[in-house]
Image (tube, rainbow, N blue to C red):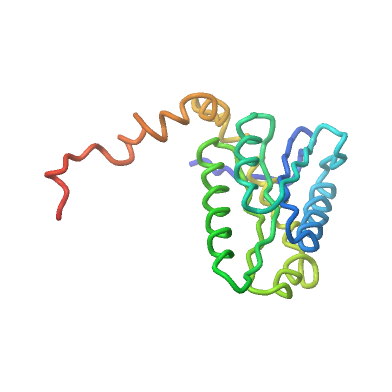
Length: 196
């Protein structure tokens, strides 16, 4: 049996998109610094004018999934890192935003076959957010590590067979989501076979 794992070396050819929500910029800028520090220390050229990392700034966390999906669909990146912060307030707004962002980021990865890293801090208080953005540790570093690992792992997986993530995203992903491949997951069942 073969074991496939991502690595943190040989990063010179990896390409990343970082999608950053501006809202709660005090937290988000710290997460971005941690993310960039990790990538740089692992041999990635983080210069915005270089050819390894592109930065996409969006108004807030809610807008991250749309841009992350478009970046992944471009087939230019080995991984997309999403950075944002959603902090609970006095209204249920937090619940709607946090839930939709999480679902959207997961869907972007699933639909495109490109690793899309969930780097959106969701906390009850500003203090908790600050702790996660550098006071105790900087989760931006962890998100970059996930991107490095998944990017290198997917390069290995991509070489395994006919269904590379580039091929899935370019045409058969829609079939996988809506057609033939679903038969392998759950065969069609007529309504009289479903227990009531």
